[in-house]
Length: 460
Image (cartoon, rainbow, N blue to C red; front, side, top):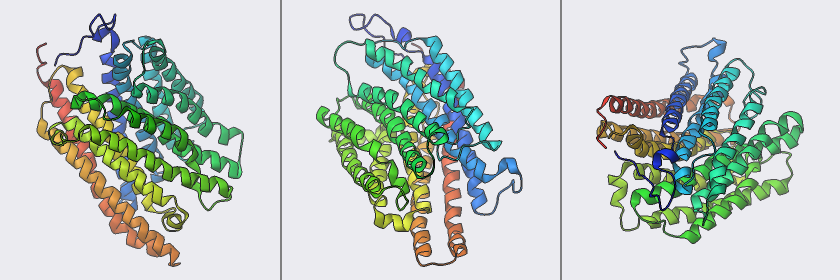
């Protein structure tokens, strides 16, 4: 499949000079490697819950440690690598400027794989920090902090060099490049060295949620604003709504983190502020969803016929449902029931896999033929990957959300803890089956990539 050459009247660079396709392929390969690792770790933990742990009694395979490998490999191994690969495609084409230095790009790539690998090794050796999503060992934190700052420098430079108006995708990217180093420093250094007790809990809550809202979300939505108009061959429906979505995210999202710690000694005005801002974000998200669905109004068939678009809009539906669910679950009334329950686990899977992983998969489905210069070997395997991933995730999230209600009602009735674990086992078995379906979808994608690599390249 031929790639675009930028006309000389618009840029002094050709597509090959702008975009380093080789590093994108390596980022995607790393992302899929860590996704495979993460899903295997998740399956191991799910087997522990239904009392079929094949490595019972072996400290190195402790489910508590592999649960942290599971979450960190998704956030820093799969999502970060996937987004970095896509940014190497999108930013040079949006700015008509190459990244600051391709050698720096490769240095960041190698260093980041070392960071994620060292994090997994440190966790398995028992050196995790006691902070959710910040379990990275203390000796890895400075290297990771330097890495996110170098990413901002490498991608921020072409944005700073461009002339003319800035498309909304670049707004989101620039925000992410500013927010991410600040968020990582806040979560991994302040609670460790500067504050303790309730203050550390408040900072930790901000870090947990800002990692999603100020790192993953702006990169995800920014890439959606880039890829969706290209694939549907129409401009985004409303520039005004895109600005509402951006500034709403910037204003309300940093205030939400305390909702992870309702009914704690953290001052109530902070808890109430988190509840209000979380509900406000759902209104902001609704404007973004309206904007994207308005863009395909009257052309709904494209969701069926264009697989990357189907991934994108499936992720948007899950995003709306996640935020709608969040606006209810952060209220003090809901928290009485679902706090510490599997409702929260279902919610987390719906956002991290149902939204951002689906978006990255869609971008990979779109970009792989262009990077490999050949069409996908099997459309059937692509469909199997989509449906196993989507249905598996929907079953898992629905199963855990329902279980969370039953657990909360059991605890509220002051039943013995054993009662809640006993009736949870069938739900956990369904979770394991749904996880196997999702892993089967990943295997279908990997098999398709292997078959495509062996196919004859298309003629230019």
